[in-house]
Image (tube, rainbow, N blue to C red; front, side, top):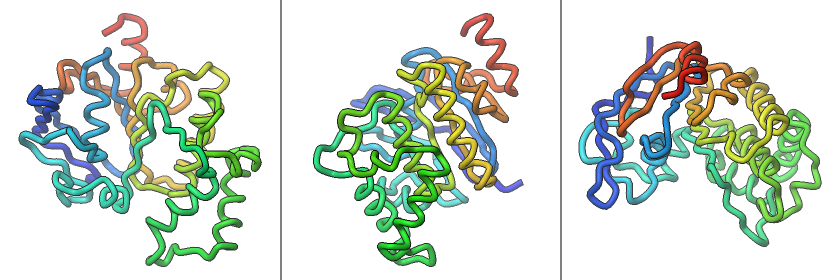
Length: 245
């Protein structure tokens, strides 16, 4: 079966220190993969490397998206190819409304494609997404994430996901700072988006198995010392919950 993402013997360094030590991973379109592991094991380093964050230097190995190597592509080019990373701690930007941010982001991705929308067309499209996710439209006129609670910030990340419709999604500790009710609400939104986009592929990075009760993974991988040391199905997460790493 065709792979959307292939990671081959990936070694990555920051300031000449290895943070990934030979990662191998293949993902098929539509799958949900969970990556678990203790602090400092390399989970977020993998996310940042996939997204192209500066400072994460690929020493050797390859990252392929749809068969095309990503190693030397910039962040914006990767985004235009359908790669999306949600932040552990979303940025606050005073003076930039959520609505304008979403419109400019959408235009940057789709302005010269068959998905391009007029001003009114985008407003209608955005209204559909906030109704899908049960988000108060008043949020759209607020500065991006300024004064938002942790749960509200994560909801704006999910709204970006709904609006931008990426093909490959990395959720980096989406559960960080959320109580159970907020986690349930956020994951319900992601599941709605996934249902409408069955080929959307997701990596869920987490310390804990709670989020995987709401976002059920096809595969679970355990990270240690910068590489995958164990892989299995969703029941591996339950075993980790009971026995630890």
